[in-house]
Length: 178
Image (cartoon, rainbow, N blue to C red; front, side, top):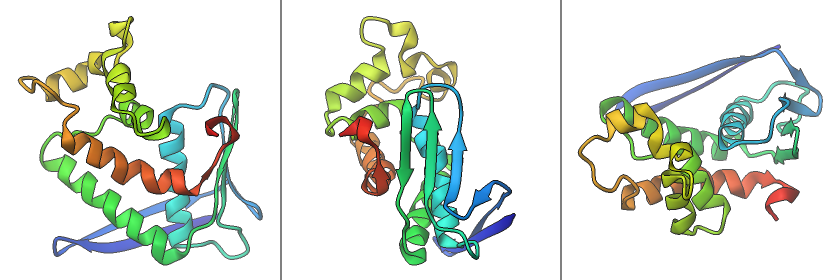
């Protein structure tokens, strides 16, 4: 077991993040579930991985491995300072989202970032393409938070997608993504 902690200052305010890891192995963190890997799986594993790298557990390699029905992925170890910088950036986005709806939609952002930064992929995931009922825009929470906004996939969305997923993709080893 390991209790990881990270503290920083965002716009002069003290912020901290902590988590308990009860499932660490000498090889690192293992996250598994029997379903196809989704954007939320990558993002959840990435956040845990960053915290583990920012505050490493003694005797544990700072690597995270994800297993799912359709394959596996892993995140390579990051220096504590590098992991801390990414965590601070992500906490800053979280802070913004507490004040106003944040134009970051994980499924659409993942489609954009993981598929060559093609905005059309994000729009297709957002609208659902031929099946609009499955688009991320059909989520009632998104519809409520974004009512009156004509184009939620604006420049801010693409900047945030890059901010969140570029470091993740840089540390990700996944044969399925090429």
